[in-house]
Image 1 (tube, helix red, strand yellow):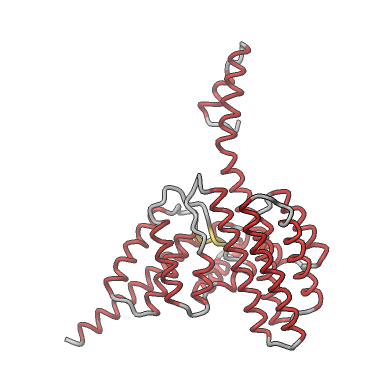
Image 2: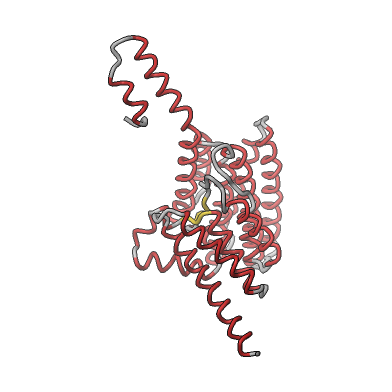
Length: 333
């Protein structure tokens, strides 16, 4: 029933052993050819579900262990993603309740279990992440020391966000290794986002421009950036406001992945445009970016609501800037 017509139709006549074998072989071959895509779909659902669920429930040591154990059964790479989600979740809690003991216990549990599990793997890609995971222990030690010396909340949040971005970048690298055969994936989208939110516009511009060039004409793009839960703190005010408006108009958007995810291409175009505005690039430069935005709008399916809203916002910003610069130039004549 799930197979395409050219495969399922073979089962209409299985009157002989040979016909039955051919039909089953066709079904098995189809299943193997789609296994990687099915795994990706599962991981995408997990990426959206994890931060959304963490924001709805209290995170305790016991629940952390449960999360890590069950996620490892799905895909070991999710350990990196979950660690990042926990860091962002705790960072979101600190301004409200401070670094409470329960949050310290959660951080210790997540970083410790992540490192111990990954150290058992002998594969090259997981050894690379294990090295990155050791940074978690360093970060946890730094956070613990900072907390004991009454370091202000903003600096603790900064440490957690930085560690989250490191883990998310490692997760992207693993995705590129695993799913590179079926899609184009850039690994520096979170680095660009972090650079932008911290005012490093030149660095963000460099990364985002490179990502746009990689993704714009890619045959297949399947990677998205989650825009819900703790991940919201990585976004700028305009993007957060846009997401909030979608929830005001339709509260059901909270449970819809099409309104809680932004594609890597859309995010890269938005960041590139914002950096061009911040750095006062030429009208010619913005005009070329408009061409890219319009091309991306045509490529993205209409069901990806947040993507299209973000692209419209990006286009509006670029057009407003071009109009203002043109008027200034005209008035100076």
